Length: 266
Figure 1: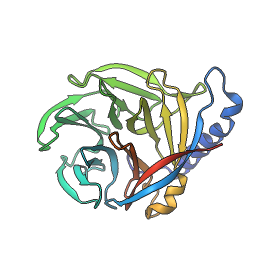
Figure 2: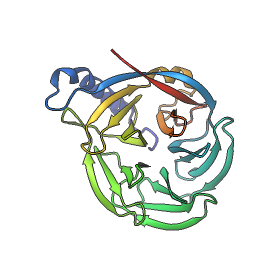
Figure 3: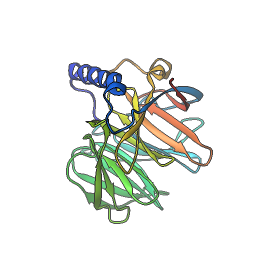
Figure 4: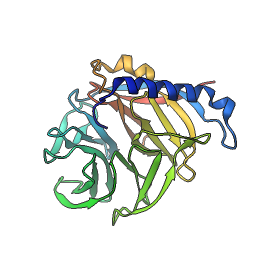
């Protein structure tokens, strides 16, 4: 997502969300209270400290990443071990690059407020087509059958991966409370993982009902990240290696990317 422009509002939203999470076990109704998780760092990898990360996924041994900000937006293929950018393409300076996802031999990308997305060849990053959608574009993932898109609201959109037309939506809630600012997405073992923008939280989401089934608190990674104290440099970026069952996270302009293991909080 874009740079943070209202720090006071950020703190208020974060406080309200923290308070909501604190009382959820006592206010849950039909929906079971989400489980809470901490994290254990399994391995640390280098990450480009200039990369304003908007989208991230892992495929066949490499990371694919999109970076944002007008005049600085790119799509990249990155060596996981070294953090070296192996291949890249710059967007037209007027576009603010957002989420990306792979589909077959293609890479699909959103932009922030221009209501246009791009399709590239996954191997060569050559432009293939454009597509359009209403509203903002934040993040993309896929479940093997459809693309899943966030737009900053509590709703997630489903897109036909061939036509890129919208086919449906779900509203993400925790005990009936809508969860806004759903950002970078990853589909992991039948669930949608979503960064909550401007927080250190990742929501685990049921893709059928939209119910939040768990909260992952990555607060300890802030101190380990090596990031500068710019308020824009927030957690953002989730990637999953299904073959070896590895989960990776990073943030905007973070010098490090972490492989993590979830640890249930009792």
